[in-house]
Each structure stands twice: as structure tokens, then as C-alpha cells.
Image (cartoon, rainbow, N blue to C red):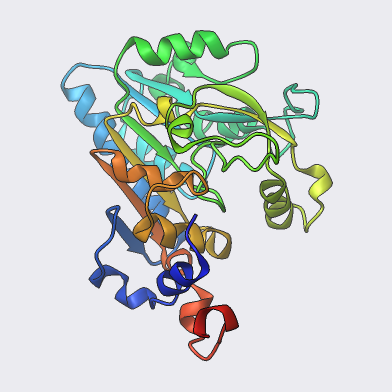
Length: 296
């Protein structure tokens, strides 16, 4: 884990100077959510169209969020009459209740319901992804999904990152009696797990006015082994303050189980994209702040 002195150094770099620094992972900064959504839609559609022209299927691991790209994506598909029949989608995670069961269909953290409404339903039926090529995780189908994922190459993993740099729900493991090594994190595979307390508090603040009681306490997720099998990994974030430190650690830190996003450094074709707010940091904006343990 980086110490405070390292964090201070990385977080104190003004956003305007980041592109001048030597970093561990390629990155881009866009102005806002609207620009990011259009970029995400355009780039994924270009990949899908290219596969169609080559007469091959396109296999993608897709997230439920960031959600800024769903509307531009579905509008472009319909307006340009782009067929998604050759697209196969593996959804990277799903939230669960305290007993490990799926949530109500209309729960805002039911990812399957959200993706149905945002990603599938708006596309004209004659262009849409085939029903049998839409793979949603649940505790009963984990072995089947794992087998399908490993049966052929994955073209791309699209996603975001969490407050601790988690990819899908591959969080830093904070259980006091069960720690994992960096290698165990690399080798992580599909599993049901309890969500970290910091994840629950962060999502409660973000979505429910700090009513953490409504945040799902468990999840099922693809492991990093599945996510990193993709030929390309593209991560995006437009959610600002709660992603800022993980972004800086990703750019400058060493691989670290406390920040899973740092393992992107080991992938041959990975890139992260952040809005200007997400790439900024309050420490950089307040050079007058002093921390006794840093300056003494």
C-alpha cells in the first residue's frame, strides 16, 4: 500500500500537469460525462462494426456503469442501422441481498434490470443482441458462465473502477482474518462475496443520500482472471471525487492488492479515461494544506 508521503506527491499534481508525467498506465482526460459517453459509444461501436465486416462474432465483457454511454450507443445503433446480432455480452457483476439472492427487478442496484432498460430495450428489435447471447451472472450459473468465457477469446473488457480501484466487484479484501496476496487477486475468478464496508458507505452516499441500508451487502462478480483475458481493457469514470485517489494510484503506484486497478499495468492493451473532475484532486487544488506527518 502506498504511504501518505507517496499519496501526497501523486495527489498534489495539478490536473493540467498529469499528461506531462511518466505514468504506469495510458490514460485520457475528457471534459465531462457527455463527452465520455459519446467517446465510449463511438469506440465500442467501431469495434463491433469492424468485427461485423470481418464476419466474426464480437465478445465483450460489459458493465452496469458508467451509464453516460447507453443513450448515445443505442441512438447510434438505431440511426446508423448497425446490427448487434454478432455481439455476445458477458455482464461483469450483479448485486445480491444478504442471503446471496437476486434483488427485486426494479431495485436500482439490480444490474440486469438496469441493463435491460438502458442497453437492450432501446435498440430496434431487428438490430438487437440475440437473447441467447446476453449472459447475466447469478449464483446458480457461475460455472456455466466461466466455461463460456474460457471457450473462446474475449475481445474487450469495458468498465469503470470503484473508490478503491476495484474492477467489476474485485475489491481490496479488507476482512480482518482473511487477507489475500497480489497473486491471489490476479488469479481471482467468479465468486459470490460480501461487499466491503467502504463500498457500501460510498454507494449509500452516492445513490441514497447516505442511507446505506438500501445498498446491497453482497455481490457476484467475474474475477480479474476473466476480466483480464480480454484483448483490450478500457476503463472509464465520470463520478468525480470518490474515484480521484484511485486514479492517481493507478497512474503512479506499483501493483497493489489494496488498489486492484494497479494490475492494469500488467496488461498489454489497457487504458483508463477520466473526466476532468475525476482526474482532479482536492490536495492539488489546495497547496496551502499542510499535513504534519508529511512535512516534518
